[in-house]
Amino acid sequence: GLPDPQLRAMEQHQGAPEMHPGRDCIACHAARSRGPKLLVAGTVFTRLRETSDCAGVFGATVTIKDAAGAEHKLESNPMGNFFLRASAAPGFKPPFTAKLLYAGKERQMFTPQTNGSCNGCHTAQGTAPAGQGKAPGRICVDPNDPACTP
Image 1: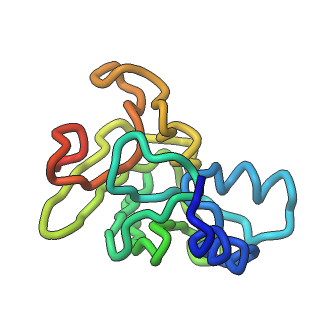
Image 2: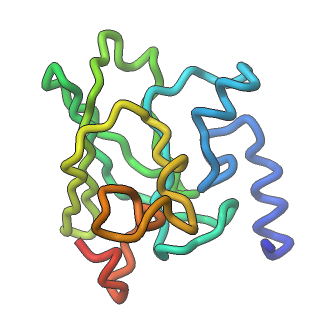
């Protein structure tokens, strides 16, 4: 669980871009239709197996490049969340690729994606063993974890 101050901070962020790091932002926004429509959204963490609702990494740059060649640079907020609102990317054309830049190091996702729900695949458990074309765990930047090191 979260320490009380972190839990209180999370509760204060309901309806804000800092809400629920690690959860499936797009599915929740679609189901509840109260938040803005998101095309791509996720969270950058320090650990591969981080649980949801834990603070992520502030200041990572996630570059999304769509099929038309348009690039969208997204920066992770203080809770680690990044997102691309539909209103900010008219004409966005999937599939897209993603690149992560943090502390001068870069990681790239080479497999084109059509689903922008990054946390839907990049879960704490991962959706498949590493090397099998699916996410092994969280989007992470821990320099001491080879699975996270660019």
